Length: 525
Image (tube, rainbow, N blue to C red; front, side):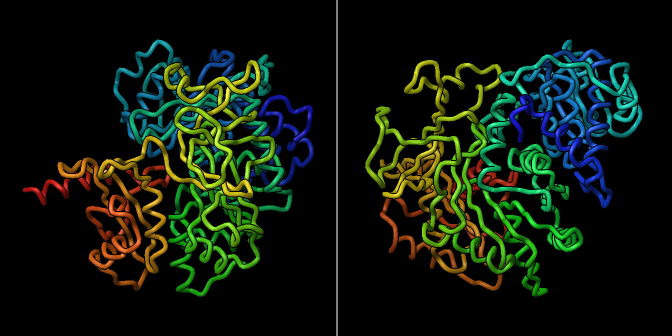
């Protein structure tokens, strides 16, 4: 990234000028060069402007992992708009809410998705244009993606945007209610890009495999980092089957793979049966929570030459920490140190800074990646962004409980809004989940709260077992009684073949809580 790159779209234009004929995107076995991506996004930008898109108006994109999504992302920025990228599997009611909440001027999606929305969406005063990837337009406000590319002079007018203007709004998964729109400026996203590049170091020789949703910031930044580095992005459908991942890794000599644990475990299980090893992969990454020992072992077995980066972050600031690969064995359970150009500390319930190691407190983040706030939600913004130590700044109160060791390495302990009060004592579900992972044969573990007359909110655990492992719930319960304090022992343990997940690949806590409540009602009945 160069100093002259003030707006996020400058990154693509710079790389296109340096490497016009280099493959930027490989999608569905078709190759798109940097020049082709730059030109197509410019044509889309010009088309949006011809259709009246104004500076800082929102454009909702709901197409899934497709090259058109990448084109739309850069094109909207070039037109001066704000990208609101939504997963294709997003329920119709949630998409409808986002279009209305964002007051979108344009919706880019598929015919089927539009058909699933309330008919009243066409009557929204702010929604002036619907762009369909497929099918024929069914209303006066609709046209095709291809026709949009053919409008205008192919060169957009200068938008007038500054780096403090919004580049994107990323709606959170909404595990505790309707999703909130995280506002990210050009400055936020360029700062995150620079910080990530400092320690990950994607380069021009890399082929980066992305089967994570582009609507998920972890997936979106794979695309942005790849473009910034002049690398090639091998774009696949969200969470594709292991057999297809193995084929793509080999076919395109993939060197960088970002993972979520679900995807890793499926790939490991499938690859082991075929004794597959990928020696050309030089880097694997994970973000969210600390890597479990089983996941680290799987990565080492599959990718013997790869650097392993365990990372942690929130959409509200992109990334907080990373664990240097050389520390992966020496700091088990840690999510590492602050990313470059970021400062972090912990505070107690009275907002006093915690200086002693191993004490749990709320994580606070200071840096240029911290969001501008939640879209149209000042109350929620005020809970997260608070005045910092220095005049005129805001810092991010993450809502995450963490601790720091004597070397300054961070350990995630749980989310404040996920804390469970069992037998009058606060319990972090992640602490109990971590105990399950110390038991050999546990593949995945999730702990949720369920109301109990006798103990208040009790703990209910859901686990899956590694292939070929046979363990009873009674055995696991006894292990918990031996290794955990009484108020941390689950009331019930359910062994499942698989655990439900959201569209972003996270465990579906709402559904698991419903399952836990249903099970308790059956017992009571």
